Image (tube, rainbow, N blue to C red; front, side, top):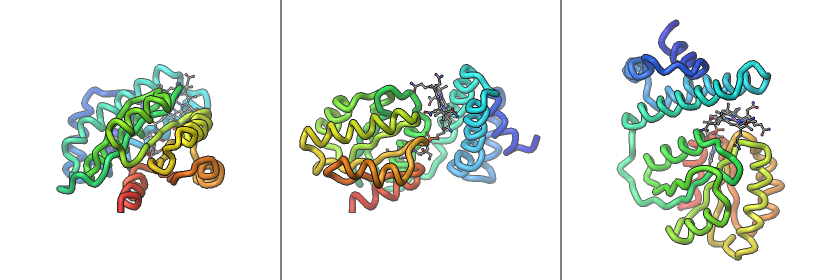
Length: 215
Ligand code: B1M
């Protein structure tokens, strides 16, 4: 297979042998972020489709996710970072009950490389922990990620919880993850939160919104 098709295939097949060499070769012609966006994420999309249609079993999805993470870790040191720093601070977490973190970690990388301080709490984080960290670290923004449909409900409950603690005015909330839609966020979620709620379709929109919030 040609290089970029081979790389995409590696994600789908969960095949890491020779991954580093292929990525190094790819970086000679294409910047690392573009490799992630155009090649690796396209592989993950196929994995999602195969799993969703019952053609791929969970352990293989996990293997693909591991190869994806290895690939991102390999590319990250080669990404361009801006000289800006101290643009703002975000506490970032995958919500309670949800283990998906590839997207959240991409958001971390993109924001960190573009002048933001990211406090990444990891996966399955209850809102109490997220709020504690946000207050402790004096975060400017709370970021929540979640990929399961049920996580969209958790996000709604979380916003209600932040409201009831009286911190809504203090913390704008940035939300993302495959199960969310713009209309759900803009209609259902903004309605339950006294502060500002933003929806990011991808990590770059997350960055653009952070820039908007912090100006
Ligand atoms: Co699961 N999974 N999974 N999974 N998984 C999905 C989400 C699913 C859609 C697959 C499917 O059925 N087609 C489905 C959810 C269905 C639903 O809820 N209706 C599903 C399921 C069912 C499950 C389990 C329940 C399976 C089971 O156990 N029977 C289980 C859930 C466990 C749990 O959470 N409690 C499960 C487990 C797993 C693995 C562990 C095997 C693995 C995750 C490994 C890991 O993350 N460490 C996994 C994977 C890999 C997937 C798919 C295939 C790929 C997800 C991914 O990494 N995408 C996924 C299929 C899909 O999404 N279509 C699927 C790439 C990633 C970069 O995209 O995270 O969307 P994403 O991030 C994007 C944007 O959304 C945005 O930026 C990123 C890109 O720039 N973004 C943000 C995300 N967060 C943001 C936050 C922001 C801003 C932007 O600001 C705060």
